[in-house]
Length: 314
Ligand code: ADP
Ligand code: MG
Image 1: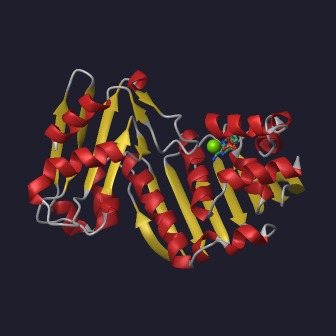
Image 2: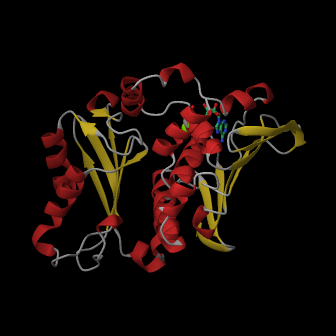
């Protein structure tokens, strides 16, 4: 069990941003309207995600941190199967295997909550607590018991960069959710959660940048698109400034980035990239989200058609 958790942890928890990703996605899944993320020392000392979502039932707290089927990990073939299916129910046990976790969660407004503490996969406390509805996940000393992994961590700035990059994308994908991100006491992001995506863009990239964005829209029998693009004279040195959301999920798509670049083509100076936030809707049958366990990479069934549509809309 311990070994299985550590193997799974190696796949799920590559670095602090992986923890942030899993915890924030759980908070979104729980229907939260506010999600507060606090990080210290690039996430290696502390990652705390507090939400006001549906919470975890007291009797489900312990199972949430257990692997759903340990018998899976018996052969190389099984390892492969897990990698290809994604990590359903793997995130919390994997995180708990390589850190000290404290979780306080309540499903109701009555303040009746449960608190559980797990260190290196071993539970050291489970007791009633008092907390408002929602879940408070506190992850301390990530990789404290896996020194080999800890050694691979880059600088605090690099780890923080991965975290903030991911939180920014999620905030852009969920303008109806109020996010805060704090690092070592400094507030890096505050969104209002009022559904205004331009407010999120302003919070991330600055008010002037947001004001200069152009709105884009597109309709097609299979797709619809809305979003914002920077003017050609306001390009960036970083291709990371292209954010694509498909059916409410932030995704990474080389093909769609190419489509955007081609739309701008002669207007872009060399090594410059537009700042774009595109929200594309399509029938779920047209997109396969299970290509990569992290579910950030997707495959489109009518790729060429989609590419042309995005290029023309932009
Ligand atoms: P998965 O998200 O794939 O189900 P996880 O290990 O990430 O697996 O979480 C296990 C379970 O714990 C979830 O299915 C959910 O029921 C519960 N859970 C985790 N985080 C939260 C949260 N922030 N709010 C409510 N429930 C949560
Ligand atoms: Mg999850």
